[in-house]
Length: 358
Image 1: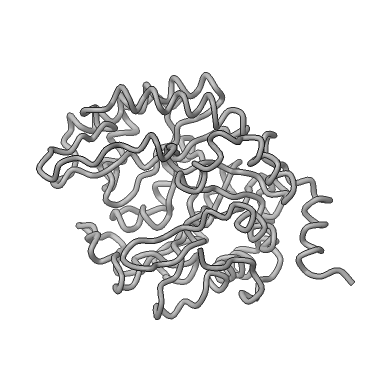
Image 2: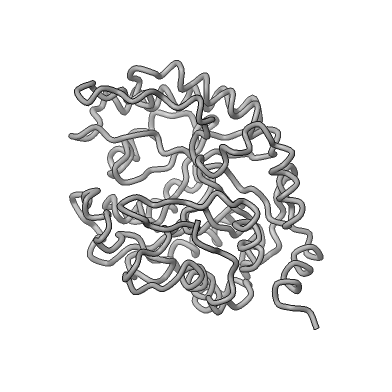
């Protein structure tokens, strides 16, 4: 008899999952909308040796774990993808061997040699995304990455967090600067078949609803899309069902994460310190926090027929937070989609994944 992992591998191959380098083709996992593709980002594959999340860079293991859970794609963060900047063929080969597509890349991967020199402690922030110092360099680097890395991988959209948030929040001039920068980057990346997709994120420049709306008002939908992150939308004081419905044509991808009911409608965003260990995470596995109306979000995705990626975007668990292992957290996401939303992923018991601490 086939082992479960072998069975999943065979099933994915038979179902015709598209891999990196070709347009992804959904396997019809969603019962109402067969064009939704399911995957995960790389943030779950990691550990917390201190106050910062250390993500795994073992690409084969992460892709094989996606396959193990029946997921169709994987979205590595920039630090996980950077190792393949000079080896696109190697990443393509891993995708073909595992049958898991590279759905997207999170932010701008850089070679270690290209890392910026540390800035003096008293140096003012640069905010290149907001039109500040370094803007021209950022635009050139983004275009080069789209041309030399994303296009050869067959990636059609690109998630970006847009850098740090000014201490008092962005001014209207800075939001205009962000829109101008995004329009120019999006215009350039579109030449290579890559849509720029801004990722509104707490502690970033599109954290609150007026910032979200202002930037989308000022950007060209031909060049600039968004990532709808369900957890960050709530943490930023917004209603993800309402915002999904209203901005549906601009959404390139969904990041699925939960948070907690106390954050619904909040007027001020939780601090970074509140997210730092040993504090419990502000984020939760899909369906485990109770702060996001996932049935409502999926109702809009199904009614309006979203075509693209919906990926888990949850952090690795922390010691003593009560959520269990990486596998337990992935299993919780998978089983919520199965039992509450009818998504046809294989049942997950949370005990037999491939992840090992980096």
